[in-house]
Length: 334
Image 1 (cartoon, rainbow, N blue to C red):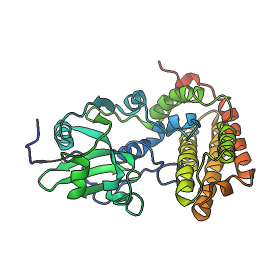
Image 2 (spheres, helix red, strand yellow):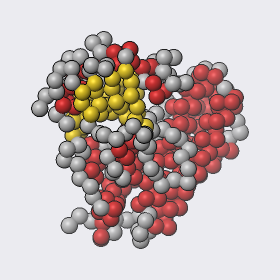
Image 3 (cartoon, helix red, strand yellow):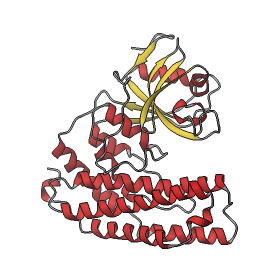
Image 4 (cartoon, rainbow, N blue to C red):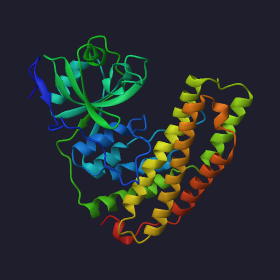
């Protein structure tokens, strides 16, 4: 039933005390990837669904020439693993009208918006500079001009002028997607792993044929030599976020995925060794990212070359180990 025009709709209760994804990792090196998978992980935690199964696409992370690819949840995975349906929307009215319509029908809404108006990014982009990002909206209160949304590694509220910037008549919204949660399913741990394992082979097949870390290092050494990369703290931060953060965060998620899949698996040793190799890659990427924050110079991160050689070796080790994984008979669909 449609909401009253000035009504309030809240689809997921009991989020006042916060929520964060629970992942099988020694520690969380990257609190968020900066990409579209972040709000999904937090949403699954809020729905009490195991997010590990959704991390398979992070294995296929590749260097795209100017940045590393961000892990992107696939609609088919969301449907098969959790019964969540994803339906693209065409924004043609005021954003809050679309939100009212969809939330009133029991559907969450993912929107691309400006992080300049998101209070959870205080100290980063909030009221400082503009950056596009994805959030999942689960609550709207028109009377209070308030939105509840999932972003990065948590659930947050915004209101007042931030509401106007995100959902008001002049809000510049990008992609918009409805998320059906009413038919969601809750597979048992064994069934969920079996389903994710079938998808693992598909994601593994999408891994780069060559070593993308080596390709990444070569490209940026060439760009530096030809003056294509600016120096200075802001340029170094942009380079590090598009490179080190996106690579490190993706391999951290891939490591968590493999650790989770290894439970009770016949090839647990190979999966755990691959997980460790990706974890070590992420650790080295994090160390370089921190170095960049202190030095503010891209050139300093590429000299010496040893960290990149280690990262390339870790990636190759993980890829080789994953090449030994086969789909067991028990994992095959009936």
